Length: 266
Length: 220
Image (cartoon, rainbow over all chains, first blue to last red; front, side, top):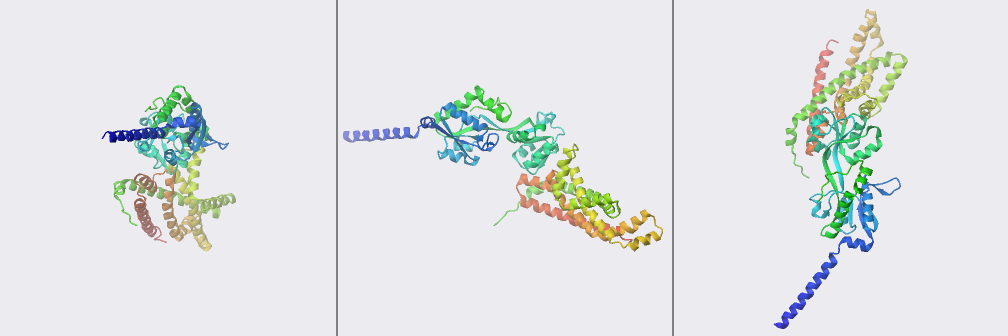
């Protein structure tokens, strides 16, 4: 009995030590992996200007690219960027091909089942835009103004719930919608801010300004679940750069707008 | 392969479709009248106008008949505002379709006038008719009678072609159909119903034209 007990104890001790050892190996945070490796591998967008695109020199550029460079700098490690389309963001994280996604990644309950998200650092604005001489600040003030929108888009569906149908002019696609806006066939444009920023670069004489926000789609940094150290570091990174003005600088540089004051923190 | 037809959302929004059909009818009717007028002027210019007039008429007809209607509509809708003239989509549609219809009407009317024997015109003069009377009773009226079937076909084609103005956001039948499609995702049902509505309108126009033709050209 005594013998068997001690034998049981020995086995138990072995099992426990194995479990602890195994757990320690599994639970090594990506944070420390990155530091030990001396390099962080980040998934970035290259098809979503101004957040991520290929510039005239063939290099990735944009808001997310700059933020990624800042992240590597503040980690004190080298940077490897992995350009990818939005559909690959979750698979690349889950298969350990990247350490983190700075990739115009919107936190949704559906995605959060598979990956974790930090507090947002920026985001898309779906809004109604118009030239300076159109004085409108809310959906109630649209009056007789005509708002151009691509038929059946998210913008169309959102706008249809906010203003009377007579104010909405629907076009076949985004190109025709833009033509209507910039030739003056429509007074305002229901669009995503990133499209407006790009269009404004080409039409400097009829610049579109935000009149009112229809909906926001914040962008977060994405990482694998179950890694509190890495999550904490990334949260600190977002928080720190919100406070010290770096994020504000990036907003002015790439989005021509201020960092949202009411950007939520998780 | 099986498909469950679901027409309920279409019946629920049928008033929208009827409204769109009404706009299509108005658009077509207005354009027919203006287009025919342009055709009469164009044909006259081509046949009897001074040389520059003939050149202009020929250039107009050749340009319009050899370029896509959609391109013409976009030029009117997006081009005029660039020159500082702002017009609604419906006005742009009437202007664009009139220019289009006018070119075809010019050729059709010209064909009708050419088919009138010279002796018939001389006979009219011999009877002491004024220039205007000859033009009206001896030339235009018989000419229109001759080309009436061709003209009515062109009118029906115009009505069907008016679906293109949905692309410049004029709220006619096809625009309403595309709108419903973007909300219900039932393209099969919607375009089936809309096609039947176009068919009904075409047949309606043909009956109407036959009746009008019967009375208008009864005397001659």
